[in-house]
Image 1 (cartoon, helix red, strand yellow):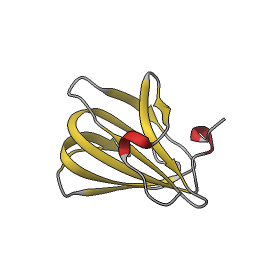
Image 2: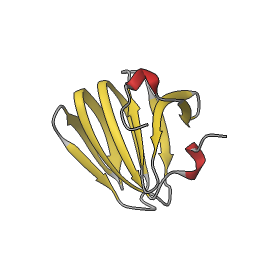
Image 3: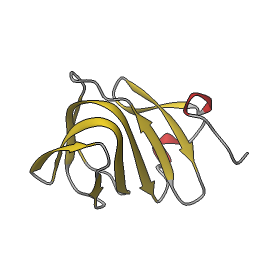
Length: 107
């Protein structure tokens, strides 16, 4: 299959208690998220590089100790192994991971 909607994607647990639509490719993973003002993702890191873009609204991020509100139309980059967290937001965010996130693979 080559075309998808957010609603047609399988949902995976991308953080404790958070199910998000995920598209797994051969060389990358895409995750769509709808953050809420109360949403918290604790500091963590992973081997995959991450590039994110805010499609609607905003997300409050901390990447390697630097905090910033990332708003509609803005991108962010998280190098592999870099500590990062999210502390609320609203709207729609899409993140791309490379190589693919093995922890989000369908079982």
